[in-house]
Length: 461
Image (cartoon, rainbow, N blue to C red; front, side, top):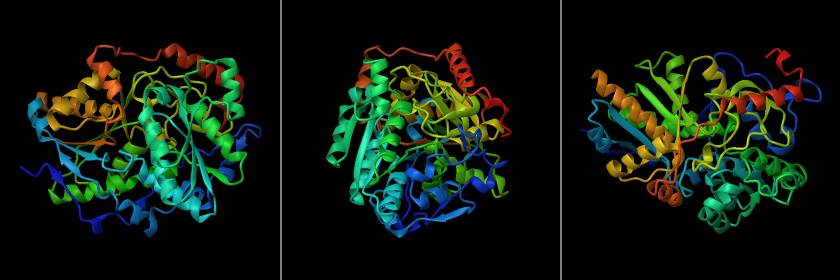
């Protein structure tokens, strides 16, 4: 039996990120500027540093990690890979279950892997501040940490329902000198418009993005930072999967299935894409499956339509082809705040369309059931978001129990749940209810989108 914890030495930390763009089944569709009804970058060049834009469209398979970024990474990287022996025994499965644990970072999740890089590139370009949004608070706290590290100011628009549910995430951001506003706020035109229409709005990630982008566009000293969805974010997260490959080599193992949760898609992508490279390059010893899990309350990839849509509610961003529930989507106030975005990363959306990844949705009660079992067998309290991956891994392990197959299952535990005690209390008190976002609401959003842009289905991409 191998050790529960598999570690790497500091010098084994990756020196490059892996860019999946050259290895996709086909090129990603371009972004579309609605006014032109044609491809164009829209506001992107106005709100990101040049190096980030270069990474967004990189044709290089391997991108060097700046030594200044690696130096900060060393605070918590390499992160541990665990063999979930306790969970295996409880499930009585012949499968081996491993999980990569990103909860050891300063902010408690995988998000600093890109936050530190983004802060670095903005600092190098002479920017003084980053404006951003956050759902559950993991991204907001990560970018607050990154900005503090490179002496940048930070402004965070936090979705109001999470601002109210998770005050300690706000405290963490403020401890790192970030200014945090509940979104929708009165600080931006986009926020004021929403509040005028609905003074009691609980907010959405789409609304918060609109506010942060507007802030960056209207202030010369500021740029915008994003915690998921964009290609460069998924790139930065591959440090996770690259480490995991080396750790599994130490125990001479390789996954049959890799599971992760998706809100925008960065944590799952960071884990599985280096293994995807093995597969498409013919280096993989197994025909590994890749499984993305999400919330039934925000089923962006399992129910959303693959089409062009805005990334934000105020339609400031250009149109991006992705699985979407509609940019006007207002999610129910479930506790998995990081899984409440209406769209999925274009890279993941394409891979789902091309049947390169599998997708599955779970309701919050069965997800918290899985988190409870994991806490009781492995001792770690997981965040609600990666608990969807735990549920997916458990299901895969139980299938192995039925078939007798001795498969290797790897999942991404992208953050701890230490700030989610109210959610777990609600669960233990029986206050959480299963919720499934209605199919008819998705269709209504798609109808509104097509009424807004009658030409959208004629785009040749």
